[in-house]
Image 1 (cartoon, one colour):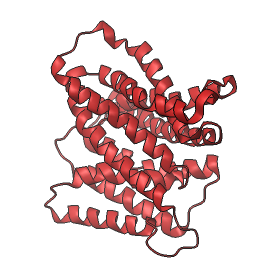
Image 2 (tube, helix red, strand yellow; image 1 turned 90 degrees about the vertical axis):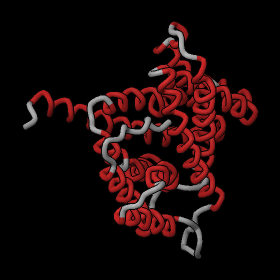
Image 3 (cartoon, helix red, strand yellow; image 1 turned 30 degrees about the vertical axis):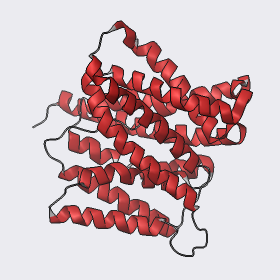
Length: 293
């Protein structure tokens, strides 16, 4: 029977993870408000550029020596962070936040289901396919989704898969410093793109508070809180709670961006959330994935 300290640790971890996920989605909603001023490219530059400075100042990875063998994995991990965030923000220009996250979530979900042989795993696959069929603009709808936005969200899902694969390897070589260094590498990719698109608008003092908010809410704070959860929750519990992310994103979009989803779109998100939760509950003896960038 779990003792009171054990229960407290678990509740603390669950609370930290839920706050971290809400923080991430609130940061994405705030970033979308920056689009009229600096575009999706500029918002991505703000997020990763400022987050890299915060994480580097906190971790100070240059004070520790690391094996040279992990450099390729680290650069691949960092470039995946940059590309994934850029195409995800580009998708938010034309499709709702909740739908974008649900589509992006199919990437790591497909990775988790890859090589499945059990019957129940094919049930989860069928749920994902059903959700995608409800979301994708394959037929006439009252408000059809933008095909380019959908494609970009799916590409972001591929980036999330690369983030997971190379993040594991970078984490082995660099430990907790991998997040700070990977974010800095991602910033090297997206900051020049942001300046090429937005120019000196990125230097506007009036936008700096919003930019810092995006960097803290979308990266620095959720990374910290998710690490607390990772060290206190079993892998299955962590994965199950993480599967709530598309629904939280939809709620954040409705609350902060005035985005409204139809019944079929909510059903599609519910199907993907159920598939993710079922997959996470079926995982045994595996470590949790790294937190999303």
